[in-house]
Length: 445
Image 1 (cartoon, rainbow, N blue to C red):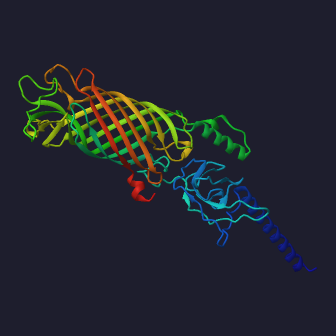
Image 2 (cartoon, one colour; image 1 turned 180 degrees about the vertical axis):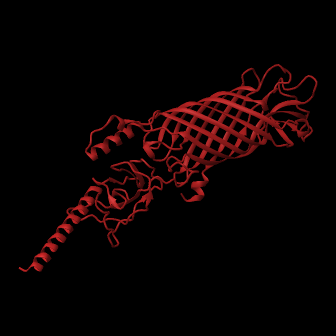
Image 3 (cartoon, one colour; image 1 turned 135 degrees about the horizontal axis):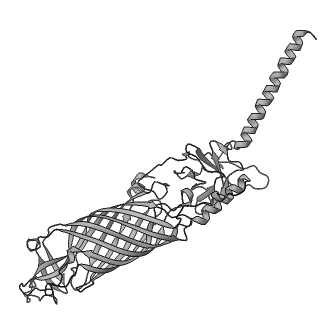
């Protein structure tokens, strides 16, 4: 063999060695980070692609979405399956929640595939890839039931309030209120979070560390702040004039203690249309937080409002008698109101999101009782002017049934009863209406 031939042979051997080393490193890289996502099948029997929910936060350890019930769901991160593979079975309600073997970081791209159960030794038939979700991106800030740490929610309440007792008219005044709800601290499913940490550690083959068991500092705490404004009704103490019936009947008498000694007019709690601006908050403890969509809550809350009574003239009906409510003799048109209550509730939410937290929830059933101070209802008993009728005890019951889980539209039923602590007539109101969520209803999210 000539010198040149030996040189060429050495070069070939060296290139072969380098190529072998490069291929070895490439294969190690693939197996370290997982295999590529499966190629989608082609044909009429190929399952549809699953749909990932549009929010996966930085530090999350799972993903949620919808798919075909019974199919196997496979998660891919940055185009590769996790190692070991992250799979789950889509539930009978078309939804899934799949644990990812690792904590996601901002910028990672998450996709999913699904395949029907394999029969015999047949190869799985994979769907196309789902939509791509980038970890850590906030997709919507004004509707947070499925959007992670972005905790604001806007609702529009449309209802009719009806009051009916010995000192209240029976007019129906519509409510059109816009509410902004901010959940400052969402409750956490502590047991679910710890189980997820253990599962991740087992999948990685590492021992659990004490720091791995840390949940939120106060996992059971929930704190809400709300702002509300709109058109509603306010019950206000109003001077009204008795008037005979249209058939020529006698002028009615005033109810007991509602007539001042120096006047022939009566003072009644009359429903008046008004504009309202309100701020409130609740702090509570939760129990049984899980992924079923409901949990228990109890705590304390308060709210305060400024109300502008819209000038109006109207006929008030009271126990079959008619009275004229004239704005000219009821010139006060701004009132203040505040309330402190205790409450117990059954809250409803969508699937749990980052760190097993129940993001911005709404009450399904809530019972409240406590103290009210309503300037609009002072001096309801002019015959006894020393009696303060603005300080009141109250009880309220509200039921909000979600008729559409996709848009979070609700039917609302409620009742509120209040009475003077020192005396005076009670006020009873019945509410029938609904809550609409514009971001879900019109935004297509």
